[in-house]
Image (cartoon, rainbow, N blue to C red; front, side):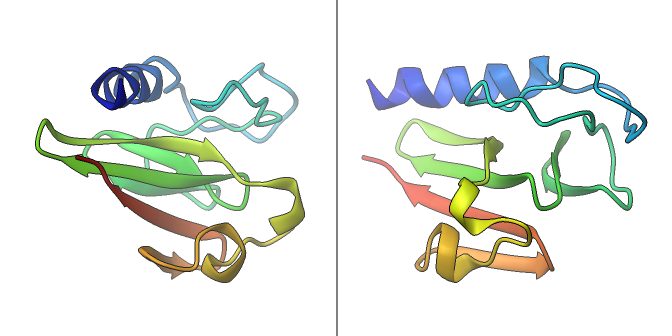
Length: 113
């Protein structure tokens, strides 16, 4: 089941990459189906940070989710929990296995069997 989730996570992250824009709502969603409100990412910018090769997440609105296991590693963007806004921290999102590269740019690593 976790392998299927990791595959879906990876496929969804690839499917939701568009050009970066903060002008208006563009229907962008993260891998959990959460509306990100207008900014999607294809590269590092003022609004986006790099999660993994070819995967970019929206600062403050998403965090990078890395899944590592025997079946390999996958990466994608997950919606920041509402209680952690406006600027999420590792202490709020995931106190262990979390790194912050800049304010609001979090990477959470999960080990799977």
